[in-house]
Amino acid sequence: MQPWFIPMFYVAGAVLGGLALPRLEQAYLSDYTLDLSISSAQACLSAAASGMMALTGIVFAMAFVMVQFSAIAYSPRLVLWFARDRMLFHALGVFTATFVYALFTLAWVDRGGSAKVPLFSTLLVGIMIIVSMLMFARLMQRLGDLQIGNVLHLVGDQGRAVIGNMYRPLHDTSASEGAADRARLGRATQTVQYFGKPRTITRLDVGALVALARQASGTIAMACAVGDTLVEGVVLLRLHDAGVRLPEDALLRAVRLGRERTFEQDPKYSIRLLVDIAIKALSPAINDPTTAVQTIDQLEDLLRRLGSAELDAGYVADESGALRLVFPTPTWEDYLTLAFDEIRQFGSSSVQVLRRMRSALAGLLDSLPSQERVEAVRRYLKHLDHVIEASPFDLEDQRMALQEDRQGIGLSRR
Image 1: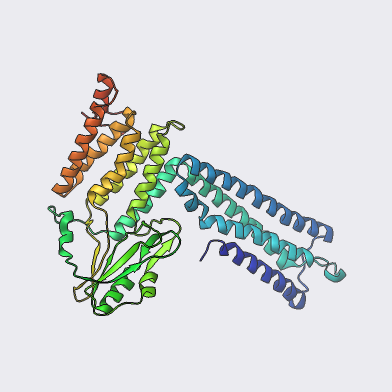
Image 2: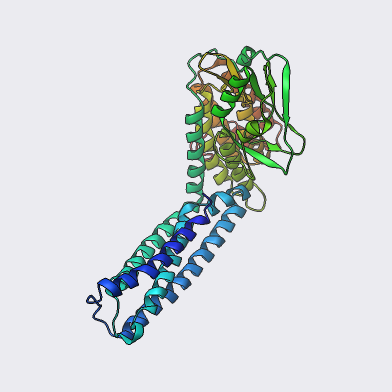
């Protein structure tokens, strides 16, 4: 459901309630009235309606400014994530529904010169105002999540959840990313291309693709990965060794597309956002290496989890054990490069960032179960040391940068 439908449901409920409840009160509960003068009741309901609209404008103007500021300070790719927060739309719905229902109740005060104030409708307005205040407090708490520490933890939590859902623990310490050799694909019998506006693959419906491949007695090989942007004419997938052709519409429906990347089935996206925040903090306009160090904290945790997972997960078989689906997945070197390359390049002039990055790499060496992945980290650590030695730092700064420090600058570990 689109987020904009949420406030519409609240408003629709307020309209239906405003049309029905006062009439039911007049028909069956006319003896129950509020002991309040007509002018006082009208003043209270008018204040509730006008005040709620003013509160709505203030709150959402403030939320807009904070989201825009966060996008500038952190990453523009975080704007939609914050702007689509359902709490924001629930708050808008509650505030608007309170305004609408207060107007309907106001219309039934002294209805037809009855000199009566409907009891239950007026009390409901009061309850809705209390709920609105609670929603306002919750919204202010949610806006506090835009602080840098909370943002980093939120992005990291998304990455940890995706890693836990997608990958199994790595049990074979000699496991190699070359396990892809088990996928011996034969002749391609059908090729599916994408035609349309640029769209990003947000998710693969693995169950539907496996069922289609089993129906054709073949294997579907995805040419594009989750997170890739499709453009006109690009090859999306190929069907190998199939006895029949599959309907392209069914194949295309199994590949979910969107305007933006999402966290679902894409551990790289969390790393991408964290790296964006780090390099934005390292830009000359912001110059905040401590934020980059905090970002590396999250990146190290994600890499430790990925380093202990079976990354060669892009092969899916059916119940009989026949290979039905192959899709691209990143290797350990891909994750290592994505997490550290840009931070190393933009943070090469910061002793604090280099010390924290060296500490993260050293920590990975102690935690990885696969010797092949350990060797990849050693090569990267050696590269980092060459960057430090070739930097314009003087000898003392180079000595400092070659030390490991989980705080960046604060506690050396020789």
